[in-house]
Amino acid sequence: MDMNVFIQGIPKAELHLHIEGTLEPETLFRLAERNGIRIKFNSVEALRQAYHFDNLQSFLDIYYEGAGVLQKEEDFYDLTWEYLLKAKAQNIRHVEIFFDPQTHTERGIAFETVINGIYHALSDGARTLNISFCLIMCFLRHLPESEAMATLSQALDFKDKITGVGLDSSEYGHPPSKFIRVFEKARKEGFMTVAHAGEEGPAEYIWEAIQELKVHRIDHGVRALEDKSLISELKRRRIPLTVCPLSNVKLRVFKDIRTHSFKTLFDQGLCVTVNSDDPAYFGGYVVENYIALQNAFQLTRDDIAQLAVNSFNAAFISQDKKDIFIEQIKNFMAE
Ligand SMILES: Nc1ncnc2[nH]cnc12
Ligand SMILES: [Zn+2]
Image (cartoon, rainbow, N blue to C red):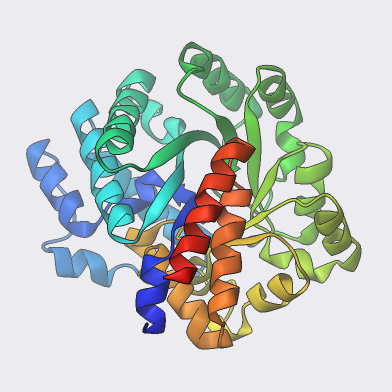
């Protein structure tokens, strides 16, 4: 079997995916028209051409602007459904999706409009596409802690639909420690916790995320290599990293994929997983991320299988479910 076919076919989970980052230019135009919103680009091609970023902030500016076309529950439904169809085609069996309610509530969209649209599509996907899911609500770290706290309070009415909370947006100058009380409350309320850390920011932010926010997973974490004792701690506590290689190259965290820290982290035995982050903006979904790594580092089939196993081991699902998915990987390998 061809390597790319192998990568496409192997059962896997995606654990780091911003649903707003799956807004393809075509969908953005369609929703803008449906909602009577003017956009400053004349065509899908012109919009796609604008997707060149110097750093995280230059991406976030465009990403938040694009999210403005999401107005009604059906917009959030359609966005999520389109992603699920792509996930299905890539043999993704389980997804853990981030959403940023503050991006929408700040512009007057009700919290329930956002969550109901996304959740309804995920439930339909579980039923008809056989893709299981968790929903993770992220706080925007560039906004004050008080606003994150208010968002957490709003989420309590939807506790049955939200598995975990996370932390995203502009990293520099907004360390995890800014949100200690919010995460403390979230943990008390029974939410799982994750945080973006060590994407652009220093290894120190990863320490804060694990020690002060007590997160179960680190999103990105690719700068962990700068601190040997941090690597030992991540290993000792088996804290997974949700790595997004194409994102890191697009946002110039690494000059190119061959200089990415992925292989060193993986070779050290950390629980590294491969994910797409904001695939509509970074030029690839999960399979394209695996393929980029395979080409750059000559990964073997066993390496790919290990990454797929890691994706289920790091997921917020029961051990029984993990075992079932990992059995599916074994069966696929034996085909
Ligand atoms: N890669 C990323 N880092 C931080 N915040 C984000 N929001 C969407 N994508 C993000
Ligand atoms: Zn992210």
